[in-house]
Amino acid sequence: MTTSEQLKTKAFADSLGYNAQSSTPPSEIDLRFERYRLQYVARGMFLNEGSKQVEAGVLSHKYNVHKTCKCLFTRYSNGVQVLQSNEHKTCFYGGLVVCGNVWTCPVCAAKIQERRRVEVAQAFDYAYKSISGKKVILVTFTFPHYRWQKLNDLLYMQADAYRRLRAGEPWKRIKDRCGYEGLIRSLELTIGDNGWHPHTHEAWIVDESTDTEVLRSVLTERWLNMCNRAGITVNNEDAFRLHAVDIIDNAHCSEYLAKQDSSRHWGMDRELVKGSSKIGKINSKSGVHPFSLLNENRESEFMEYARAMRGRPQLFWSKGLKDKVGINDISDEELATEIEDTADLLAQLKNEDWSIIVKSGVSARTDILKAAETRGLQGINEVLEKLTSGMKEIPSPDNASSASLGHPIMTESEIRKKQLSENILQRGSEVYQSVHVVSPVKQPSISACLSLAQAVELMKPYPQEPFVQPEH
Ligand SMILES: [Zn+2]
Image (cartoon, rainbow, N blue to C red; front, side, top):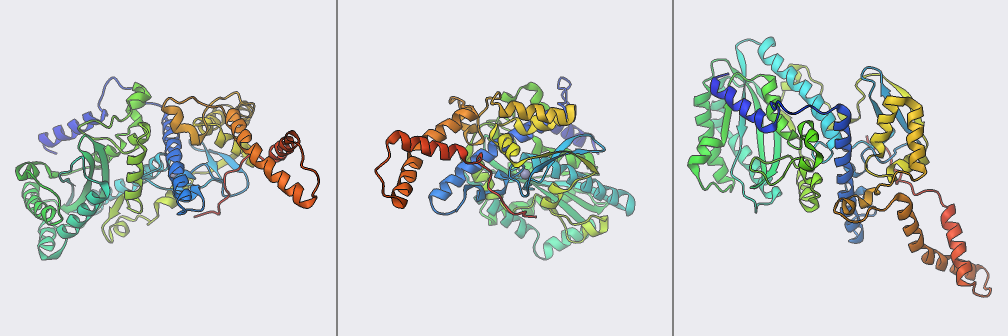
């Protein structure tokens, strides 16, 4: 790597805070809490959207709006298991739906990206150790974007520009000239002052002798041409030529991962230690990961993002490269549900216990895991007892957004009472109707009607998450 490239990489890492001397890396447990917390906020947003779609007659159930709102909340079998990894001693849940979505789920994203990094490292090993005369270069393609542009439109134009870039004889000649053997492409997205910023980082395996300056200038001209044809607005072609294509020569895995780590702008690893209020400020020039939208409760933008990214893979390997490197093709969903090492069953939670945990607010799921890791089964029981007795006064998932916006936080029992009182008259009327139909006796008094309804209501089991069949 040349000095200027080293400086570039260092500047990049600095911008992410990786080289900051003052930051102490937060613990895995803190990171886990942050991921679960953001996932919980995402769930609230999806459920709001789901409710709207139910009202509009588009969906029959709000939970079906997006799999992320079921992730690590919804049971797919009877009971929920708390499992403990034999190797790492960390605890995790079994028996729950896992969404496997790298775009919308902070919990799954962390797990999947960690595993994908191992695969990428294998590809670099392959390039430098298994074959001779090759090297890896990192090619980044960006394009101008503006605050007023919709993400979907930008992604459409970007995809169109890529298709054109890689089509026909001229592209074949570029590949032949540099002895191109394959690539891994990572689709990245940030949001900042200038709106959505989709871009890609690509690790190309090419001949050792490839002159990256020449390649950069050829690629830049072709990229500019294709961006124009795809309808991307390029107001300043000189700036485009300077910035739109970047190449790091003789790249190593750590550099690719540092680039990919831009996806960690939401960056619990450094921001946690500065306090949660500072996580990923969106109004910044450099842009931050869209998970920051969750932190700032920017619901409509997060929904725009979730809709636009649906079904888009984050990582793409060129045809045949995985086979050469010896990687099994496994989907994100499969990866997210995979247990990496052997685990012991620490506790089997009853359905009603899980319902209480789900209804107990943002930290209940991680409180259970933390207690399991430090105090085992006894710890789990203590947390459950505390939650059951209503000592933990935190908002329910459906009220998470309003609570964080400064509205009064209702305890679970208050919410339950409110729901009860709202339902009482309705139920009373229904009970009266059924009594009346079965036996046309004298109309019961209002109070008799209410207490009967209340009794019926209280006898009903605690509200359950909807049961869904395993989806994978
Ligand atoms: Zn998930």
